[in-house]
Image (cartoon, helix red, strand yellow):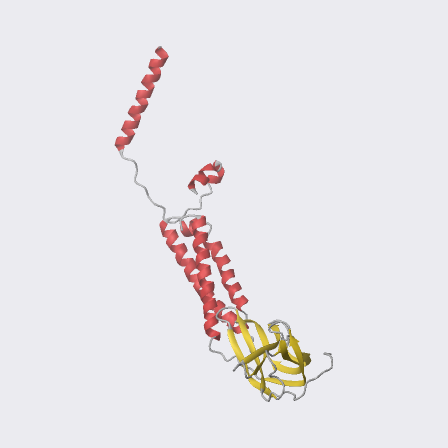
Length: 180
Length: 113
């Protein structure tokens, strides 16, 4: 504290302490909040094709294509400790080979400054919905779940599941036409 | 650092930023109080606006304000209690004067040669 640089050093160090304390207080003020929202999801135009899966074991596998409408209001979530959301749609089902299959078919980053009320109509899947066998045909319980990571300014990466989930029975016949 | 200061030209060396001991204590207490208050105010600013950046700007603004107060060695704040050093004792003066006498003698001898 005796000369200029020493005082500047002490001041900077203490300023950083205060900023860290404010950030920690911000985290504590938001850690017990409820981050779940409900959604309105409709899945339609489901088609299943039986294709050869060259990538893995060269067997015939079920490839599903679909379109969905999604309506979610995320505006409630964006408090001062939320930077952005990573929203993704998962299809979950049980098959003879695996007790749990989770396929991410669509995702989107929702930033705070952008439009946070989502009303998407006729969205096609972003990633292939490909089974590792031929289990999708006639499947009576494929569940679509909306999950999102909450990316905070301070704290941990929270994973939240939206309250609604949609159970869809899959078609009983293969589609043989080309993908549109 | 002192070595670097010693290399500066003499007029710059006159700009000393040193403050006395009592001043150091006051300066330290000053920044602790101001920044802690700014942190508390900043938290409520950020909470009410729901913007963490506003809380950070409050703290950073307070830091700049505090820097204006404590960084310059204000004479009316931090230099009011200078250290009073003891005056040199008499004996040293006597010996130094005798040294001068010796030197004078040497000079005289050189002149005679």
